[in-house]
Image (cartoon, rainbow, N blue to C red):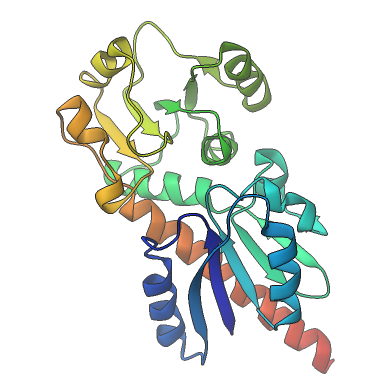
Length: 247
């Protein structure tokens, strides 16, 4: 099984270590590498990777929207999020998005219970935010969105049945903002009073806690959960392809 992650940057990515462990655990002879692909180059690179015999790839910033045109088929999560973080090369190119599943899984582990009926705020309107809101739609959680572009926030709220950021902050907040982005003073103050703040950035790239001077949950647990979901996606489709070929 030949696997990879593409994006820019990717030198910091923990995905190779995680997926090599998954391969070893499953007893599969395979490889997983990180390949830097600058914005605007994803389509050509993915075509070459398919020809080179890759089984599947993960897609990270800033390519999650760019690769949509490469996919012959999108599942419901990718279609609604309009972003792809996992691709399988079969008879066609299949795209899914496991970011939402990873975030919700990590959050429920932290809470020790389902997120149903919880008030959850999402900071940002990009690909990762949309994937999380997509997955939260089926959990019965109450969702709220913050972003700098008011029109985009309104569009996101309509699409994902969410509400704009309230005066009374939600008890749980997930930040999908890029590492190092400075928060407005009012928003930073809001985050001091919420019960749980989770940053989708992981490791040293998670600087949100330093900015708001409080303990937060970094995105390491989310990364592992979404990585496992991606690996299971590849494995299921690879096994189905073998069964189709042999039948």
